[in-house]
Image (cartoon, rainbow, N blue to C red):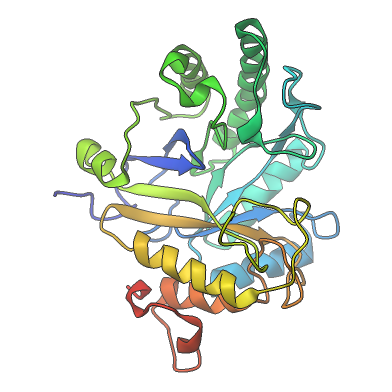
Amino acid sequence: MERPPSWTNPFLALIIISGAIAWMNVRSESLPEARFDGFNVVATAAAPFGSASADLSLAKARQLGASAVAVIPFLWQPRLDSPDLVRGNDMNDEELRTAIREAHAHGLAVLLKPHVWVPQSWAGAIAMHSDADWQLWFASYRRELAHIAKIAEEEKADALAIGTELSQSPVSTRSACRYIRRLAATMIAIFDGARCGATADRLDMLSVTYRKPVVIAEIGLRSAEGAAAKPWESAEERTAPTDPTLQADVLADWLAILNRPTVDGVLIWRWFTNPQAGGLTDTDFTVQGKPAERVLQCAWTRGCQSKLEPDLKKGSIIR
């Protein structure tokens, strides 16, 4: 199969995000390397983007071999069935601009990947009671994404995702094409190059059909016992003893499976702007300060040494 030789050629890549489909534009002038590997980066209150701590954290991600980051501005709604969607207060516009600039300064490509936050739940469970409520919800979603897309365009972000985690919304059904087309049309007018296309069941089939490589925008699991059974489950949903080895082993397995010609990047959930986050006693998703760090460094830099090998379950993840 003929493929573009690297990210240095302009093309549209498909992002698969927890069952939802999003198209993104890739800006050829700023992507530093051939792949789009890296982290979903979440800002903490003690280490906002632009701080010395966030700078150190991004430098560490780059040192591990990351070539890209997803920056996560949150949207918020009070209930799963509420159409009242608004921008969250976790990151204002100037902070979002700072995040893009800071990541670019470290040579990292930037995907803006808005998430919808619902208290005590996740975006995949959002479900309205009527089509009228869905129309109200999508109007709010389109409004908030249009504002974020404007910032993405002005700051030359490398990519913009839509539909993150919305597996229960009309985004993920055939009947929703009208919603996505309207949303995509808005994004096209603001963030140059966004597209909406058909879905397919398999990544390889998508890649062959469109002759484009695929980027996996989010994989991860907690460093907790039993996390492999429900890798989406948060620490708030279930208390469990720490198990950093399980996290490292599962990520190694997933990277081995995704080490295929059709996949041109994998973004890990997650990495904090606080460089002191994580650690061996942490049971949440971050890989910081855990054996998973070395798994990723080995996969991304081809720099495995003997001391790293015990952290790898499969040597085949080394490219």
